[in-house]
Length: 521
Image (cartoon, rainbow, N blue to C red):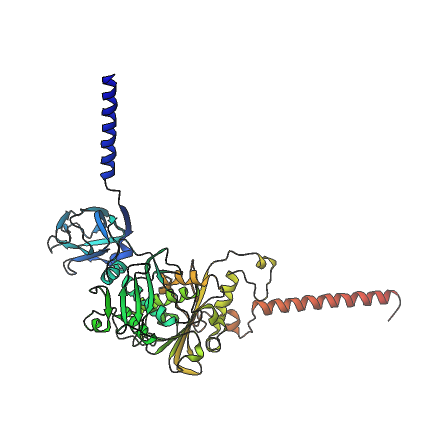
């Protein structure tokens, strides 16, 4: 009996010890793996030779995590049989020597915990000596994997900025509080977020699923415009005594770094803060096309948008998310936020001397956009309407009425105002009121933006179709011989009239034969 009791006591003790050990073991951390091309867009053109010098691979870890370990996979190709060894140095604390091979290969480099650090991590790629050929990095076969634990929440404005600019883990969705009938604050803040992230984020209309949440605070007791860390339901707020202060604080957020700030950032702090973005000399426009807008040429964006009026036709609700996405991508393309643009929902209130950018589905009914829009814009709108299942125009076959798969699509255009050739007008709209938000995300967060071309363009998930009838193509047979050209609708009408004529002629002949058979003249 005593032995049996001792066995039970021993079993219980062992079980308790195992349970305690399991409880003391840390929970497995998260793992994030990302292609290097998503972090460094120039990775595919990275070449390490004696002439180009060392190559650099940089990535940023959020201040709220504790890195556990990582792996760096580099797709490498030795440019010649005489290529020297490649020396990989991580944060000046770990060096790896890679021997050349006759075939392209992927090198796996361990990143221990003591090597990784919060903030910017630098990987240097250097040749062992300058004699011989160099190396080429293959971005398609290069990736980064980091294991980490989430250690804490952001504790300051500096943490918020570091979080926004971090590569691992990337900030997911961003929530900007909906301030009724105030499109300026939301549009400028969205651009400031994008300039820190280096990409257009996903904007959401509820704070629950957002990684960063931004709100407002109007307080007459404040000393002036202020960006204030809150750390509660909202991560930080744009604060001020009145509307003018709020606009000043929004411009500060979109143009000045808050990385060194604590819990508040005021106008006086902006004097010593680093600028966000680079205001550069813009190239002259080469025709009035969408490529000028996407490549940040004149006149849009000049002077941080000081010569442009932005009309957001849906200033409230989910419709504003589409405008924030497009303005975020615009700021990235132009290198600076448009903090001095005029923002509003009514084009009649916009200054007449400024260029105009329309964003929203209601822009389709705005005469200031439609009156001077090129014919390509209407062609793109009809194509977008057909994609959404709307039936427009004459159909030559019953198959044309078949239900098509509805895909979110949008239409963009750029043209010189016929009434004032010195003023340019751009528009981003869609006949799909419910799908424009998704279409704007597709445009702003993909390579579609760089593919915009022509005087009008239609985009969807599949790609971008540019329209420009001013480009002279190969002459048709009718143009060569001076013959008239007919559209499909005109050809259909002519065929219908010919068929009707033959029917009437047949009826007349039958009537004549019938009359003659009865002896009538």
